[in-house]
Image (cartoon, rainbow, N blue to C red; front, side, top):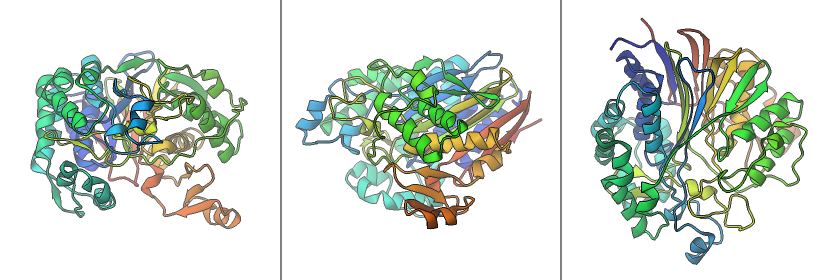
Length: 492
């Protein structure tokens, strides 16, 4: 195989280097993205995990439009409001075994490779397995997160043994995770969801009186979907449908474009989220309510605290493939539960469910919760023009749309578009957090007690990345300076 010309942007320089090497070895953008994502599951354990969920939008070479993949795991067959309440909880637990949902990532990797990849599972996972085996250098971001999560991780001996407090520059190894990645490389989806790894996950959950069974793992499937398309300026933007909050990002963007004030646009879009967004197999979310900026929701947005840690990356290649991919363990370090012997932290995506029986996103068996992960793509004149996205938990729609506006309204280069100062209404619905170098930030804070100034380039404003496609084999890309990331172009 010859070298593939292409570009990749990720939130960690090692992941970017691995993705670029896959392109150099002749793989395509989808191969490179999955290889980079697997590396992030190793080197950014506070942000993501092999036992997390994954969403992607892919514009395949020669395709007339993009396709979406929703790799969201479901609640267990034992998961009911009553089952959680019987275990002594009035609200859905944010951490621990009851917050665990079926891991969606590995199945999503497999489906993406099967449909669009040019190399096998083993080739894309081998670099990540090597890093887990031999060790990797802790960045300041990971070191800070290990320190702040020590109390959570201490509750689980297996988790604390893997991720004790460690400082920047130290070497962290995870041989169990290396074995898991090699097992997936050799046995694929089937081995993970129906073999020894599945047995280890199910055993870890059962031992802690959780709600997921071997059957839940064995029956898990990703879902191919048609992305939601809407016009913004002179581009067509593509977002994923429910259970993701892609419609919320669309609503927020369209309300800002219609001239609504930032806070009002956010409040309306998020109120719609809480009224409608859940697993579409359980309840329908009417797209027209989100895509009409004049539609006024009756209720206020939910103010439940929801931290979120996630990775976003994007890649493109000379063949015309473009991929926008986002993956997460939900909160930082997920549930805090490691399935013994696997090296994997299980996600706590179930924390987003409600125990209120009248809520659209109430906990029910085999259900996908309202999901914050939203990769995005944009087209101009019927051709792919940009891939973009950001981590940021429930703030993702606000952060992503600011990057979109920087690209479309301001015409900024992707590197500048993702670096520009950002702002966000916090989950309380009142506080407007603003990076200190945001234009007029000091005046905003002086004039409104609800404004909270934050340090410039603070990671709570997301790690955004973007690629703009200027033509066949011509790209510009940006990696967020708030992350440990980078961009790499593979040329002749």
